[in-house]
Length: 407
Image 1 (cartoon, rainbow, N blue to C red):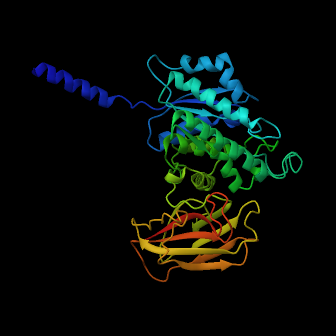
Image 2 (cartoon, one colour):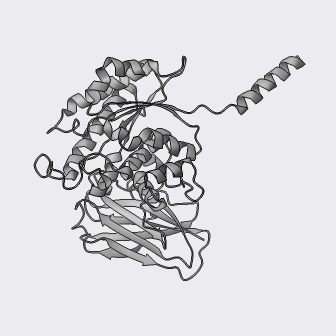
């Protein structure tokens, strides 16, 4: 009996010393997924920095190919069972189609949806518990030849791509159940950045380094259900993630900027203070730090807190706008009401910090506390008096909420 107990204890100790098994990730896509050495390696580096076991990934990336190719090509199908040790299964499959195949003018949206269902079905036949992630691509950059001929604007192309990626997710969930698939809204991040040419390669189509990093952040969030604003690469004594970012010329400030945008595009359940989700952006900073869309900052009586509410892509430029805020005990944030879930601040103690007749120019506000309020937080949120496309609210649209933790 004692020998059996000792043997069992030895086995338990051995298992505890073994490295934890990381996720098995299968990437289907094209040049948007492999440009700048690819999103998979960055997703892996972010995961490790966030404290997750290093994932194992397999890339099935073919230039210029759409979901139909990945769903029907024999080699792409065979890869599902050929690249894992016996007995292992895929945890997540990432599916990225051509940026045009989900548009009516240059693709076939209905076929795109059907091909997504077929591709995911191929993987589920091998790995019944595999989660699907649709990698929602972006519109071409400002100044591309598609505008205003093929599409009226980058936003018009974006809205069509986004709508059909969401339809694909709905179709997949209709077959495999709620929660089986998630849309990783990389394109939404590019909309918040107004399709800036600096985010693209010279063809205004493929990603520059920053866009590849943004895409990797969004994919990481969808795969691991974890936001990125609280992940801080160590650039001074470089960890693997910081080393990788530095090789791509990504600075700490750029990481922070992109992380805030990525978190605005995460699933609503992951965002601490979700707003409406429209083309309305709140950036905040505690000086001398840079403005960021991230949800948290710290501040004290010596800190200058800065806030900026901006319309994106001209959607809310004519709308009256407000910056509102409320005070709460740190760790005990307001609970949104069921009737207005997009309002993060406490309606009972709401204070209008600044107003403006339109958002033709961003609404700007700064303040410095004259006394200490350690243990308290200030939650701020932007509001535009215009209907929300995302929520259907006919009266107003809100930004994400941002919390200043007072010290």
